[in-house]
Image: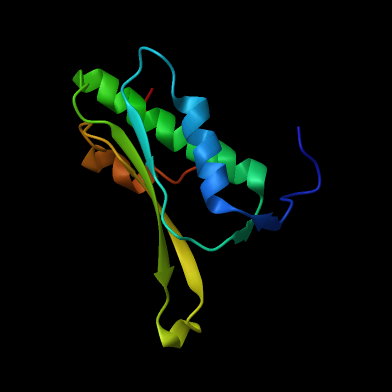
Length: 120
């Protein structure tokens, strides 16, 4: 277990996402495709970001599996977003994970950010 809280560092986004995609891609699972964009580095805890992304990608793959989807891959894309001038114009990064699963039940939407929440 980690101690002392998050370890903030500069994180290269595309290599991190590529690592997550490689870790999640396994034979017999739905196809997985990474669409890297030109994105800036982030400040954050690399290990925590990796864990969160891996959970999201695995959830997307499981949704694909549950639907029996094999034709279309789960896609993970990175995009740079420039904030409005009112926010200082600082760039941020969007990491989008697209699947063809059933989606989140409306009754569960209010709970999805609660620590430990799961529908499994």
